Length: 239
Image (tube, rainbow, N blue to C red; front, side):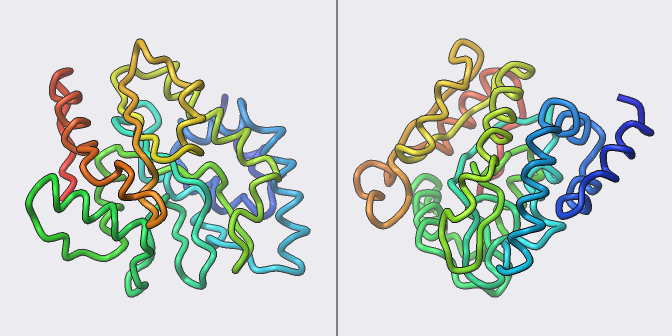
């Protein structure tokens, strides 16, 4: 797609325009071709919802996970459900929260599993996951927006079609990617992934309700690095 075509499609977006414009050309081209009709539909719905409700994350951060991770160099994909719905929590990266925000229980448990695997103390805040994203770990929520104080409130406006398309595209166009699917919800996405080309790691969700059913001790972070190294790829510095 030519740059002028991308600009024309940008101009037709309202609520999502600022976030899309912050992406590199590869992500923009994918979203504005493969997902364009769905993107326009979501954009119109968000414009209307924003008239009466507060939407998280802020407009410019909706596609933050994509901004931080290269589409065709992705090494690991970790799938969440939807953004945190508390004030100042959501930052467009699954499981991460802004500096100064109390760590949500699931994130605390992720850090605890890292502590178990690497025998270290994870004395970090909720933005530590940005360091993962910069190493090509895509932390992708299935739904990319939420209404304040209403969990999973925007799951049915079309986001799943776009994020499923992202997962399929990464599966089809890349090789040797680790997909960490935590919990029944994320594990449903396994059908979108070519198992002959990638590693799929399954575990219970890190929430307090299920963390003791096998998330603790899953060893996913070590297993991911072992797989990447077996393919002569640089491992992830998780801690």
